Amino acid sequence: MEHGRFRFAWIGLIAADGRSVEVVARHGDDSGYLRQIRFSRDESDPGGRAIVGQVLRTGRRDYTNDIFAEARHAAWHEAARRAGIRALASLPIHLGGAVIGAMNMYSSDPGFFTEDLLATLDEMALDVSFALENLEREARRKQAEESLRAAEEQFRGLVEQSFTGIYIVQDGKLAYVNPRFAEIRGYGSADELIGQDNLSIVAEEERGGLAEKYHRLLAGETQSVSYDFTGVRRDGSTFDAGVTGARATYRGRPAIIGMMQDISDKKRAEEEIRRYVAQLETAFMSTVQVATTLSEMRDPYTAGHERRVAEIAVAIGAELGFDARRQEGLRVAGHLHDIGKITIPSEILSKPGKLSPIEFKLIQGHPQSSYDVLKSVEFPWPVAQVALQHHERMDGSGYPQGLKGEAILLESRIMAVADVVEAMSSHRPYRAGLGIDRALAEIGRGRGTAYDANAADACLRLFRDKGYQLPA
Image (cartoon, rainbow, N blue to C red; front, side, top):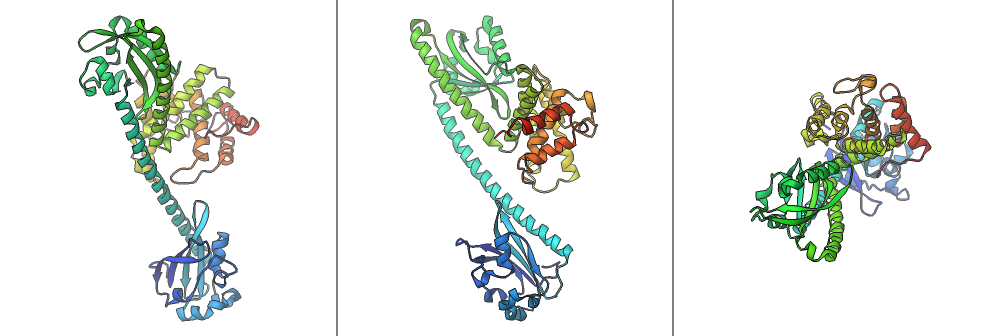
């Protein structure tokens, strides 16, 4: 109103009855016009036969540059004269794919709405719709966070009161233990154990075997392990321990979650212990599932993205003839390729508008950050290099190193294709998903230039010829 020389403007939303229109915002001098006119979405209602009703029904912008020259506005001519208006434009407002209202602009000048002005107003209406989408998304996010907090409190209550010792190992250290675990070890407080070497619970002569089991678990060679060993208490006494452990994610990074019991009575009740361990394994796998779900709920955008990229990359690798072990390496790299985004402020990651050059530079730094996090972890696959190179392109147009052709690892080239397909197909805070057809068209366009030809062809075969679907 202040810069566009409009006489007045208002926004109307479709009421709960689905027909009438409620004025929810207005500005400027309408000389009583809005009090005299009843607007409706219903074409059978006289108030729904002019521009505003048409826009609410069709979801398309409509306008007139001379109200008095159009018969459809005849019923409103007198009110328009009193208000001193000649031209009118109405633009739809969308939410969740549906028309929920209209933005309406009025001018005293005939011929006021030029094509350039209408294009600007179209963009304004889109901005309003996009803002509403973001507000609704933020409300859903807050609701999800509340649900997550409630679930975490419930989960922590179950774990803290468990009769089973529960622990999490990360980077070779105990990152979490529950009170029962501390009790089994002979400690008065769980906090006393945090940061201890995870092998400190094992008799020295058995530590080599346990270290090998943990290594295989973290390497993805096995999904879970169950074993017995001689445990060591704080006072140096020993006990028979039974443990079940599985690979998991803790605070966004690889870890081992385990459950431990003092099974010193095992030799006196062998059959009973076997039945108990079977129950323990079942309970443990359920616990792992809950822990995985909670981890993904923490960030519904990036967590889901990384998991889906991993699945697409594994499918492309299988199509190219990768064996199971090499496919597992793609899976691990897919889950971790964007871990460096933890260094980027969340307000940039979730920014709905265009990034500034400085913000985009920060985004471009995440492959290097991912590499810095992963480089010291002894994976059996080039996980850190894949994270560093997944934004490189065959023609050297990528980042952060501008590598070309064969200088880029094959796994990285596969990850680049999978990353583009998932990112383009999925919704983001700054845009709606573009769909799989647009994503595949981009892969086809960049085949042999931006993207590895073999990886691109394998991807296109999977989706177009073999019925592969985007992971849920």
